[in-house]
Image 1 (cartoon, one colour):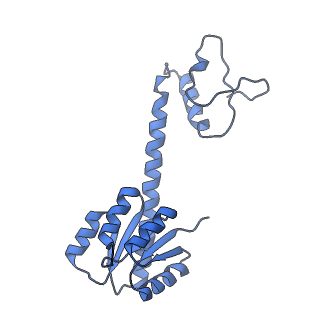
Image 2 (cartoon, helix red, strand yellow; image 1 turned 90 degrees about the vertical axis):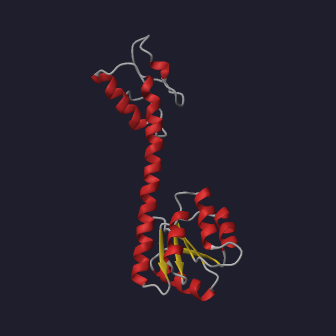
Image 3 (cartoon, rainbow, N blue to C red; image 1 turned 30 degrees about the horizontal axis):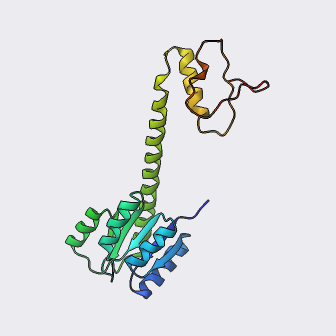
Length: 195
């Protein structure tokens, strides 16, 4: 099983070291950046599941970093961790697209729980996106004519094998419309197990 990858962004090397140690002990793969510009450069080269960022940094601050991340990858979770904790900052971070906002000094167990919840939420967002894609693909079967029990079984079988990398044999009488298939070519070779 792959470990979740977390990008830590903070202009304080000591804070990066502490956070990397805490999250590393939780079996996360951690990469660090010292400002938003470096973080964006890293994100162009590699994919992550979560970005944990400070707000006040040189070059590109945390809010701008979150906005840019949302434009590129809306599924990528971001958590703001800052010593300048105000309600205005928290609201601004959430409006920019942050999943959560935590102030320094933080409680380790609360931070770990927030990270875990953000990653779980990311998984749900990814699953939802994939489900929408599958529903869209399923709508391509609407051109099947017939709603009999037999046609419903055929459509059900099509859904089951549509993502499989396998050869499928469709059998039927001449003139029954076996050549409608919109996907990859289907073999009618001898010896294949029919559906």
